[in-house]
Image (cartoon, rainbow, N blue to C red; front, side):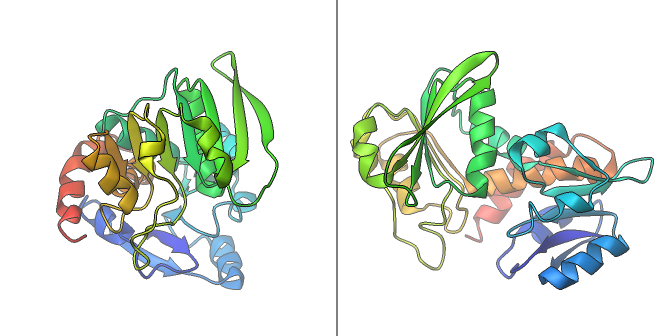
Length: 267
């Protein structure tokens, strides 16, 4: 049995995506914290995807956690290895990078703005640092004074500043914008944290929201002729990457574009 575990799964597209692979059945499994503990201890499943709010909670239940998931601090895929160990990894990372590549959005040598500092931000921060970002700015509502960090990636020291949204006007030279917040998501459509015209050097926009297909942010990117991608392509790419762990077989990502187009019609 394969499926998705989380607290609220009513609007999830994961079952539809995985069953389009025609490789296994897949269920949505909403669980309370108490139910999650019993479910994971019983291990009566073959593989799972994990969503909010359990991507950190599941880690202690694993016999092995991949170095990537350890560094990010989040597991979104659980599977059993040939020795029967329950393993945890993170396929959101490769899902994001594949989705960005499909939209011809690159990060090497660029100044990146990430909107939101939650769990998704951690995954995307790791991905853009590994991809050679020159500098990262993280927008947050939670802080008033800038917080500056330095990360080492690919042997280089990379500056990362977390700042309040009100201070983003100081970073007009941002080249890539990535929204990791739920702003603009159905049913509260229409919102956007920024105006892309404030960032004249912007050459790529990624929004993790996938419903609606075009958020206000992505509509503006499209109107301005800026390469863009949404969360649907990331959702599909992370799912087909998870299928590799579920089945022990590769090649599922070749179905990404077909699945995205089929689902797009319903958004």
